[in-house]
Image (cartoon, rainbow, N blue to C red; front, side, top):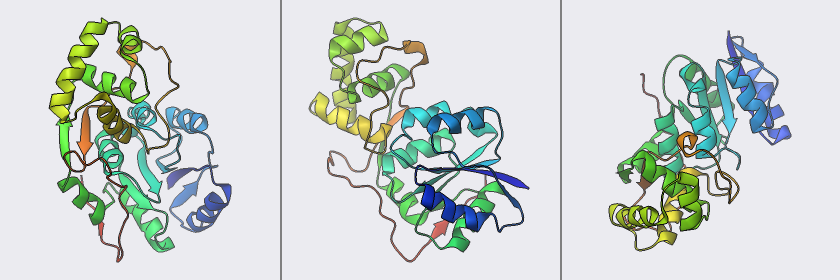
Length: 248
């Protein structure tokens, strides 16, 4: 029996999917979560076997990073209308097992969860094809932290304080990052960072937040759909469906 936990902030949509999943004999549907805090708590207790996670604005790179340890024992599938290539790539790197479209037929919704529970991956061909067109720039831990803070709108002095380094060191890092990523200014770097950090709606925390730099999540890479393409749109899955399921 597969214990499934659904997270969504749309109760009517969640009820509709629950009515479908509860008809599957091998599924045990747990009470749905509508907050990230509740979701993280249940995952930390190891309650579900599989989590179907609605890609709400609250599901950011930082939230997924926080769940990375739990993903070692709990399989996660993102439930989306659309998703950026950047976030999809980062999510895969963190251990997300599948990305499922909300608009798929109900039998395919069930099939996806069964495949993932069986140890397979579920990523549609349109999405994996977009990875082939992307350019990946590997970042050091410090570079990833700096890009994360820059994307929140922090100034050099605030970044220096948060990371406990000098303002001059921040300027050196930024200069190197401009060349490494291929951008001309901090605005373009922040834009690419934001696209990799989130679904595009929210930064990872409130501006001005001060946390210990050692525990701060940092991007491991920036994924750029095309060099210097500032208007890249989220992936819109075409029809007909061509799912790609790969076994670990």
